[in-house]
Image 1 (cartoon, rainbow, N blue to C red):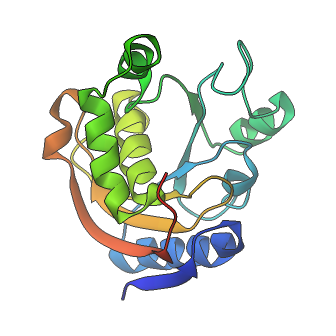
Image 2: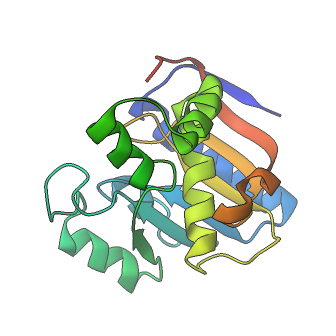
Length: 186
């Protein structure tokens, strides 16, 4: 049963996590991937009974050389068995550098904008699942539940089988568990 939140935002975090965990339990899915910039959403999944992987912003996303997640939070997550991946964003990276330098639009950004038609959270779910797979943190060819949001907190959860980045179009979103019905266009 798909759930729609009235609008996007962090006020949906607890309900999104509950929906994702319920879905994973019902379908026998072992892995959860969570997008978490500060670690706050990921911390809510400590001891949830699933294998959790946290994907956070790359260093320099907001401030040169700096991660958005505090070292103490990252350490808490890792001590709880939740690996934290901070690496180049799949749908930004070099294409974003080209946009900043030369203007225009580039292929990975077209993919990102197409996925945003379903909401920012759906785009982020696909992105972080593929990033986690590329980093070897989740098993290949296995369905995972992915939790993400539209900035802060979580408002979107999907079930999907991600493909490696070089084969991203082989990724399959099997179900949208929950998402905001009303969302801004980023």
